[in-house]
Length: 260
Ligand SMILES: [Zn+2]
Image 1 (cartoon, rainbow, N blue to C red):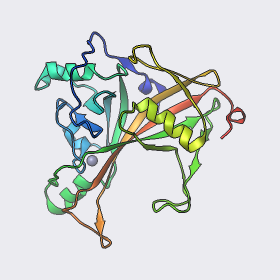
Image 2 (image 1 turned 180 degrees about the vertical axis):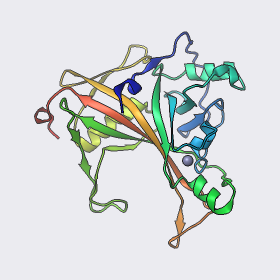
Image 3 (image 1 turned 45 degrees about the horizontal axis):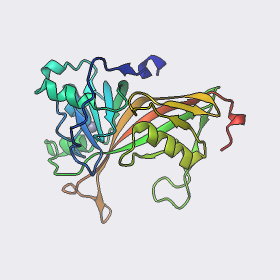
């Protein structure tokens, strides 16, 4: 993927009001298109909600609001004037603390639960409750683009002993950047320093051993796993939905100088 896809785009001219409350204070939520007040539920297909064509992959813009704990996704050609309430869209997007929008590729798996259900029963699943959970996944590179993988414990139920990219769930109250840094520290021991702007607005300065660290999301995919009871998939049980955001994290040092 070319690096031009990962450059953040500044949202120009939007004020940052602070009186708007999170939609659901207990959860990180995902909203799409012009539905900034409507959390998408796990089991619904993000791609269906975003695009008319059921493509496997599409390019989207996303912005994450730390105060709102809300990730908002919209098609690249999204026009706010088409939204149901332009003011509401702009107002909420303005609250996104990083103040920047990323353009990334978004894909769903061929096991997208909504589609599996649809093919089998000729209808999309109807789900109640259950929000999509956010997780991060990091391609941690040294200055020569060597990638660090971690090995999963043999005791884990899912993929024991597998070599994987470091990553994990985004905790409540975290920004995406904070999650990336915490997970890298927890899983690799690499401690990236974060220097926030004085007003906690705008991008933070990230460094490792005094060198600048580049952190940019480039790809996200929808992972929706139907739940099983007695070893059988059960259609009327809420599937567990995740949106996994992949970040490229580049350290400007050779791997020999990055103890893990
Ligand atoms: Zn899907």
